[in-house]
Length: 227
Image (cartoon, rainbow, N blue to C red; front, side):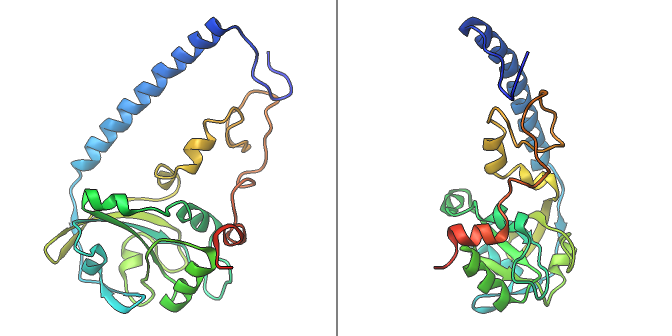
């Protein structure tokens, strides 16, 4: 039995046997994720119009967000007009990505696009210490067409460029975006996991309301923002 939120104590042989049983499920899940990725590579795509967004240096065509690369990942960051602090989930999620040069080896780039006016978006980027490249779709239909309209939620989109033509190849939102995070996979390794009430846990495990452990935007700014 378990008491006071502690796993039961067993001998090494029992622990290894139960770990091996779990490992079989983990390997099956890994193979399923490989199969999902293979199916993702076989998805069709849709050609996009020639959108014009706004960046730090002024208007920029969607095709130019690739900066010569063939592939592009866009995180559509939620935006609330006239608010000092933007979505805590978006702010915390994107604060993870501080070293993106590895994408160069894969002919790809990863950027943020938001509905906020570009000057406000860039000021917010500095306030929370975000290290990604930000662009605004406030004056284009790109955000809405990518599943993240003004006043709407967040999204993750992937695009492919062929010459000056851009195609949309994949989209997700909600917990589908969580899969590219490194925070939750690490937290899920902990004996108590996320400790959120919706998760199935043994009796006696600590549990708190959903989102209680998440960093909010002011927390991110305090940790990483401009001093």
